[in-house]
Image (cartoon, rainbow, N blue to C red):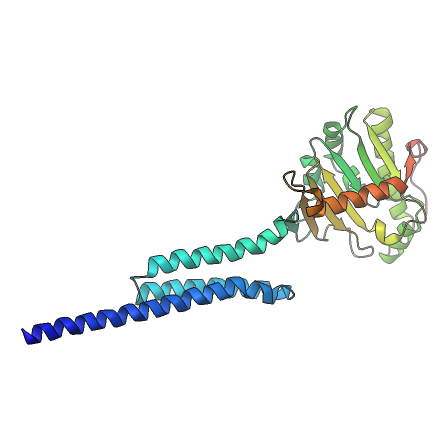
Length: 295
């Protein structure tokens, strides 16, 4: 009887020790995950190149922790998995939400590999507004007239803000890329002829304004396209560095449930409107019968 009592006491003692160890391990795991979720994002906020390393590290830690828990502490594995997965999910959500909450819903590494020119035009069903150099890549797309037809109505004007074909910017850009000096100017003129045909011959409701000659070049580097009153595509041109298809592109969504000023969409919309006010309206008739210039 004494031996039996001693044996039961030993088992209880070992069970208590095991519970204590499990409790300590669980608290260390939870404490580590809490530290990672709350502190690490602040530490890397100004070191964006760390984000990939942190994400890989967190994923590896999560995997190793759950495998180790399954092998050595099967009693707590379901709880460890549930809590660690929730905290890992919270961290990932916080990383994405900091962009979503300001309207940034996507980034294309390059325009060509993401929402390219044809795809952006196919998305236009009720609104199309654009600012850029000459819209040549849009107007030469097989999707352009279809987008114009869908978005043009007596109460809805398609607005295009473009560089003047005589802008020094275009000639300088051609020289930088080693092209004939008038090539970009000819591209813009061809684009304006296409638009003029749709405006005057096809009677679509299109308004074009041209940047003033004294508009700073840096302003004309930006390419902004508004689609259906809720999506803005933003990219930029680097003259002398390819066709522009290889540049990144940002997708900014307008959230009707939030204040306008809380989204980058608001900033880009205001930027467009301010430039539109100062630009020169063109009826495009001067470009309708114009042929390409000779170098």
